[in-house]
Amino acid sequence: MEKLTNALAARFASPTRSSRLTVVLGRWLGLSFLVCFATGLFSHGLQNPPSWMFFPTSPVWIYQLSQGIHVTTGLASIPLLLAKLWSVYPELLKWPPVKSLLHGLERASVALFVASSLLQVTTGLINTYKWYPWPFPFRETHYWLAWVISGSLVLHIAIKLPVIMTNWRRTGRPSAPMPDAGEPEPAAAGHWSRRAFLAGAGVTAGGLVLLTAGQSFAWLSPLNFFAPRKMGTGPQSVPVNRTADQANVTEKAMDPGWRLAVAYQGNRRAFSLAELRLLPQYGQELPIACVEGWSQTAQWRGVRLRDLVAAVGGPADAALRVTSLEPEGAYRKMDMPNAYVQDERTLVALELNGETLDIDHGYPARIIAPGRPGVLQTKWLQSVEVL
Image (cartoon, rainbow, N blue to C red; front, side, top):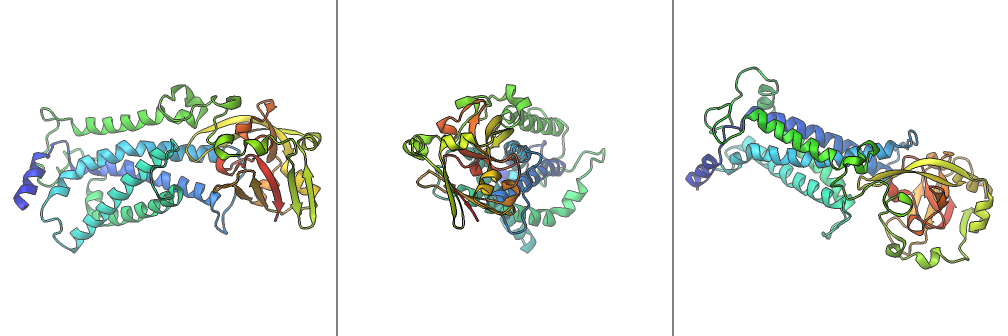
């Protein structure tokens, strides 16, 4: 077995590989994972807030920026991860697989990191297309995998720290090859130089960002060739994730007898669409930004949510529970912290881009608030309860 595995390692050896190459790729990959981890924690906190969570409403595009960076950086990490695996995989073929306790810890940390990272980026990519071919809940799994990746990465760095420090800076001398990889060669026949390989990995990651980030950032939208959403498309020039038919709300939403119930303790009012339109109307330019990475800024018009709270005597520091006409679903009910309730830009929107709200955008009324994930911008409103 040892002879076979060593022969395979030698067969796949390349003068392009070196400890310096692996460290540089690891540095890029580690930075991308750190950005994804931080922005992912922010998104998760907005949807499942801990007691200490703060809820920034300014700038209004804060979630649009954060989640756009999260998804585009996640996409960029895919070619970096594959390049990193290519730089080290002959080492994984060596025999015996475990030589000592330290070597066993190193192997375990690598195995855990590689497996969880591949699962994370694969499911994350598929999620941007809203396709869920697996039996487990994506959001919870994505969240906990991020912690597993972070922990295994910290362990791996701690174990490999001497090698990392030795190869962190370019010394002007050829970097050491990977063990048993042979003498370093600047550019052997049929092989890329290490510099060319790094350039190729960087260009691939950058190109992937340029050709997909237009779903998140308007200035890149002309280059958006591969992302699943494009700005300016969909009803009223705004994309949708979930239509009224998919949510099974069309009949209830189109019912002429629809009323929006607003309640606080014993006070309760039911507003018809006509009555909502008679209240003071305000316009706001706000983005709708979804966890899948796409976003779109649009003109919204409707009633300030805090005015409806005041109409039933709700306190200024109130939080809300908003319920949709949807008969089921994880986001049928949404809790809204006071930071959004009291922001004058938070609306019960009745119009979008100068027209009556399209049913796929939440007709007859929906929530739109600054700095919130799209899944929390409840459509097809049924009731607002002041907590």
